[in-house]
Amino acid sequence: MTIFAYTFKEGIRKKAFWVSSVIIAALILLLCLAPRILSAFQKDEKEAQEQTQEVQADTEKTGICYFMDETGIFSENIPLFQALAPELDFQVLASDGGDTAAQLEKIRKDIKENQDNAAVIIEDSGTAPSVRVINASFMHQGISMNAVLETCNTIWKTKVLTDEGLNSDAIMKAQTVLAGEEETVGNLDLTGYVMGLVLTFVMFFAVYYYGYGVAMSVASEKTSRVMETLIISAKPSRILVGKCLAMGVVGLVQIGGLLIVGILGYTFLVPDGAQIAGFELSFSNFTAGTAAALLLYFILGYAFYAVLNSVCGAAVSKVEDLNSAMMPVSVVAILGFYLGYFTSVAGGGSNLLAKLALYLPISSPFTVPFRLLTGDMNNSDLGISMGILAVSIAAVSMISAKIYSASVMHYGKKLKWKEIAGMK
Image 1 (tube, rainbow, N blue to C red):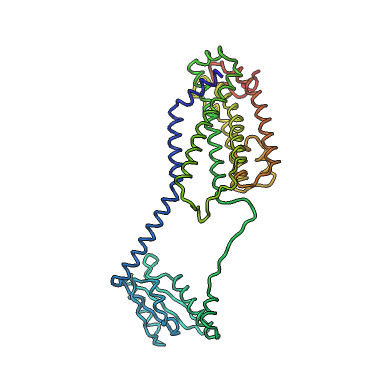
Image 2 (cartoon, helix red, strand yellow):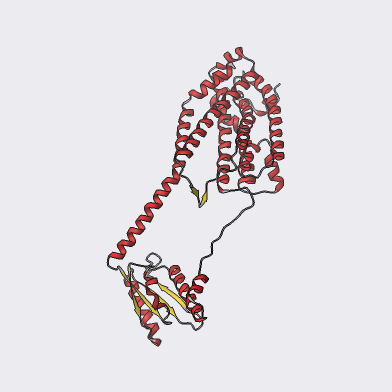
């Protein structure tokens, strides 16, 4: 408890703890404000479009749209086309039979010289009309081809159905846009996927960051010779346990504070019915049991890597050598993270590889959070994964404690991993 209290106070007092907490809290609040900000922009954009349309309706036309209809069907519905480009003055041209090519060439020349102009040409091909839209360039499109084609299709279908003897009510029913609804039988939703993705990264950085804090604490105290005083107060193995527990609690305090900020931000800042990409936010998979399992996996994942990192801190005599000493553990952590990410979030790999990612202690802390929040986790797999991780922590802790005890008072050149492995 002496080591725990000392390390905990040191961890809480550090500027990095408070600066990172404030920055992450600000990002969480900004994320909670995002739906309101997006909604405000969409509202302003809609109002601007409405104002633009009103202005265009009240002001003079900025260009001409030449309208040539060889069938005579579509020219009777000019108001429908006028609504597509209110800023253009639609001029209906008569088709001169054999001189159509000459007319088109004249129209093209005019549009090339006056880029605000456009043309809609409807040709009678015998079976069904064909539609041609002429604009100056892709940068200057007076009227949309897709919008014109959709309007022409509606007019043509109405004409065909009328000729077949259908009344206006039947035609309206035939052209009714059908409503659709998609249903999924799994528990995966967009909110769970996004939260699982975020927590996978949070878990990795939290485990890595606080594990690094243990190694840094040991290395700093060895450099400043504080370790010699601590050795008098407690056995090396207890120093190891005290430091790992203290940095873990520091991590829980920070994550707990950020979680409270997130809950308050969601409660007071996120509007009701907020959506992500058209999907309403849903936290149906985030239950009390899920929260408890996530907390437990953070503790277990942190414990596994913390005891490994503590040995790295004890193996060096100078803080400058810490990064190189931690390289093997960092590589293992990164491999574990990518194995969990690839098999869970990215949905890659075989079923065997996915099981390995779930059971291996180096990857399970980064695999389980995503699967819990997406509903792709059963109790038996969770129990096996948790059991393997707990047994691995116990085994690694025993080995690490012996190595730590033998190397913590070593000064001089940095110990190699081969030398560390041979210590008793």
